[in-house]
Image 1 (tube, rainbow, N blue to C red):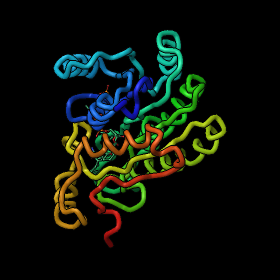
Image 2 (cartoon, rainbow, N blue to C red; image 1 turned 180 degrees about the horizontal axis):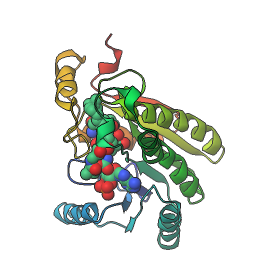
Image 3 (cartoon, helix red, strand yellow; image 1 turned 90 degrees about the horizontal axis):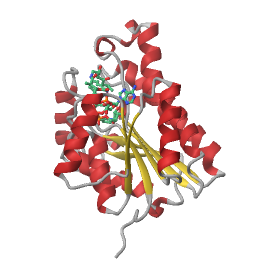
Image 4 (cartoon, rainbow, N blue to C red; image 1 turned 60 degrees about the vertical axis):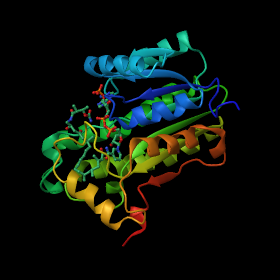
Length: 257
Ligand code: NDP
Ligand code: N5H
């Protein structure tokens, strides 16, 4: 039987290493026959990704550098993708950043610069890459981003990132309306805590992860493969009637009061 994404060209932004959520997504969509186009910011991530692809015997269609903080970098990256690949059918946005000092203590102490930086990299970047990607999605498409429950509730230490994720989720809805007429869908996955490079060293992670195992309906933590399969659903035709949605992949934790 043909894979769910056979012959589809999918751009994946945000693989830093084997623990990245974007790597879980890569494995799911590779399994279903997608052609993979990767973007990285740091050289270090690019090298890690090269090794990972080799280890898993995956041949990417293209790898380009892209810093979402820089409009020229986005234009160049999507220009190269257009040149080398032409049409794309999907985009995975798995990128966020905030200063470490803004991920502890009280939200009220967030600096102007820290607030704007979190918004720029973690929310505006989705707007900027959707603008660039939509012109390459001439056969329709699907865009999927990654969010966290801290957008809906006050979760200690998530602070500036919670406000950025609220902005990201609202952007998903506004973007969904804009690009819907081109048959492009925009959705988000709200994942439970997963130990990744980003999560490393931020206070409060262990506590949040253990609460899932105790309190979530499924009483187990979430992993990259589960997020990968849910993202695959959004990228595939199985979700063709869904846009502007935030889907929780969190063992059901968000329904518990
Ligand atoms: P990773 O650290 O593996 O991935 C974060 C990625 O963001 C890195 O690949 C990094 O690229 C990229 N990035 C940061 N700044 C920029 C930039 N300016 N331009 C381009 N890329 C950039 O962590 P995760 O996999 O955990 O994070 C992926 C997404 O999942 C994030 O949006 C995060 O908020 C979200 N999420 C994570 C959860 C978790 O528990 N881990 C839970 C819910 C949501 P580079 O390495 O090249 O710098
Ligand atoms: C309640 C929690 C725990 C506390 C908050 C964590 C927030 C993490 C998100 C941001 C994206 C982490 C971040 O920006 C770290 C950087 O300051 C430092 N790290 C880096 O620069 C590394 C090297 C690179 C690869 O990282 C990035 N981002 O570029 C939330 C957790 C329970 C769940 C969670 C961890 C959510 C989330 O959004 O990631």
